[in-house]
Image (tube, rainbow, N blue to C red):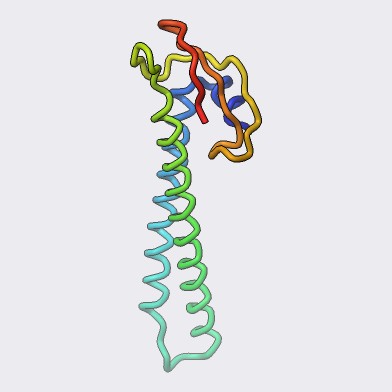
Length: 130
């Protein structure tokens, strides 16, 4: 879902809160995968069968890959949410997250893929969120 559609649908505060919940869910998943990897590598017994060794090695590798993927996704989502939240303050009256989206312009060079032209509900000042 595009950024403007998500914010219009839920409102900025709920969109931001949802982004944080989702990002921290990735963090918890990554930590659990790290624990899974550590346990799998700890219980490897070199004197047992080759199949058991390979199975635990695969579990450890999958846990490591999941941990790396989750960490990257967490940092990306958290950084994006914080980047947008920093721009959600009206430059005129300094009110946070009280804006209406006038229009969204496609901008492939921006972080979100679009530029939101917004207007403050408190004072009527217009600015852009990139």
